[in-house]
Image (cartoon, rainbow, N blue to C red; front, side):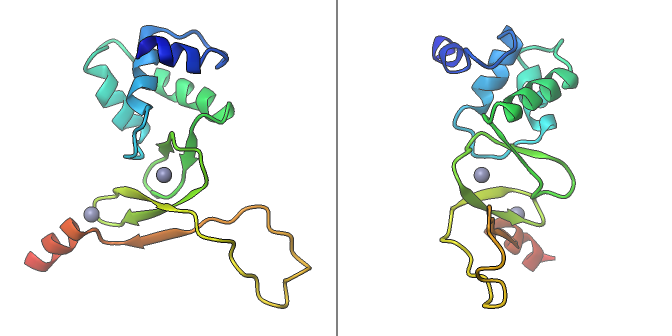
Length: 140
Ligand SMILES: [Zn+2]
Ligand SMILES: [Zn+2]
């Protein structure tokens, strides 16, 4: 597992310290869209001496190299997504969980903009309440 990670990130441009490998390992296949604090809390269990700054610098380098997306879906904090393929997000406004949804087709522009505006990227963000939060709210 570690050697596969070392191979995958061999050109990342920073030293693959055990702490950074633990961060990469935590991110691998992670669909929870963790914040820097989430990553820190998970990895600090194994590496109590690690600092939040290490998480930030590591995530910054990964983002620059295109290995992770920085999401602004959650207004409270940046969230990271190791799934860099085009996809959209659904966020629960109560518990702030973010779910992936497949990328929809292109968004149709109104006639007034067709041929005038060239679309470089489009992204859909859906906000709502997940089933659990709907249940909690109903009980209130
Ligand atoms: Zn929720
Ligand atoms: Zn995602």
